[in-house]
Length: 178
View (cartoon, rainbow, N blue to C red):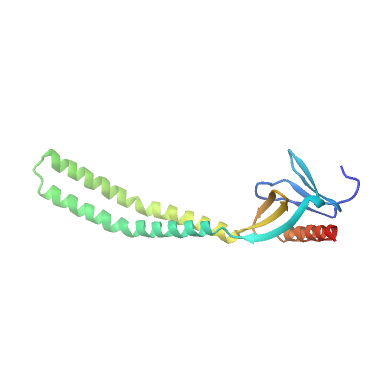
């Protein structure tokens, strides 16, 4: 336990460091979690970066899933109707041969598969909605840059408390460099 009080602290509520606490002291930064405590002297810290980011890949996947859902939904009824019509033609001219029964069962199976396109399209649409939600939610990332490496603390959403903590850390770092 430290003797001097922290200048600021931040409890990480989400992300990979969930449950950890960042504490800023006059000359060091302490990251304490359930299993580890890391102390970094501010003299070793080169820069601090805070950013709100959205992952464009999530948007791309959401658009792709929505297009796939629309295609499956649009193909379902015509494909099922076409298979039913082919099935009716084969059964009308049926002579009882094994090839005809194979065709009938194949057309029936494809027709049943086409009927499953609609629920599958709804599932793809729901997945796209979830991806769009997480794209919109974004994340706030605090990046601590050292001479040879960097540490990233990312939390879901726009987090004003993490931004305030980063600004205090930047002020402490600037005061140490002067």
